[in-house]
Figure 1: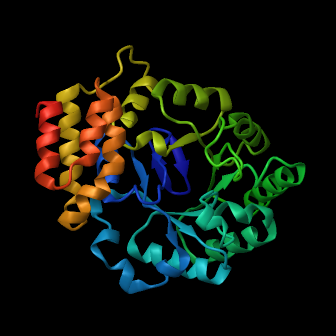
Figure 2 (figure 1 turned 90 degrees about the vertical axis):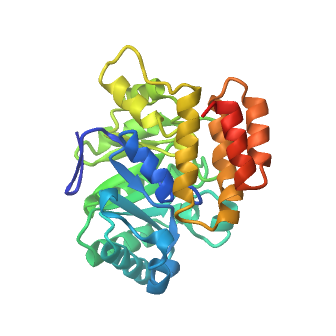
Length: 324
């Protein structure tokens, strides 16, 4: 069991926040396959301070979504605190502070992973948020801005300061900001962090694509849990697979072609509750490209799925290749 503040999970797995992906549709499918804790996509603190925006259908939470976490991105303590307070008012059960995003447009504004070179400001933001809310507060980090000694020292200083101030959990992606998603995630740093702070919840992130490998990373690192991000795009059943590996089952669930088609159709149906019909098709393409990877004829399938121009053609293509 994994405990984050007052939140208790039966399995040590969560769906990580994914900008542009982890909307209610993706979260709903993750829950259906056994993921107990999901996160919404990252939101700018200034946006979260705008209450009319939070009332839009896209951001409303449903009762069946709990527990759910909300992730915030920003640089100013006061604004981040107000944004976190608003998230709690919306019903979020956990606040996650993003000091890890490596996207160039985020870094250019000094946000996300760029903040790792400013440990004092990160601590100031954390303390402001912690004092503004009553729910658990976590931090998402990378292991430094780059691979320099000074950057690594800043990373451990941030972790030490956060632990000292009572952070409810650290989600650590085992790459530097400058690495983006190149190379392999360093889970050795995650293991080192857990040894340094055995009483703190340490969640590992990075290169989580295969259920057996994820469980192996948990066991070898000693991490309390894993936050699955890219590995869940177009593969929501990965959460069931992880649970079955943890349970020691010999045969791990793998949806057949018809089941995959049914999941894709359900995902599209859930998206239509959130977006306008025209937007649904092109928005869904980034998921379809990943869903197609699990098909035996992935090249042809992916090509036809992502080139469907409207709902009718998309449904026709899904039925053609998945037999639903």
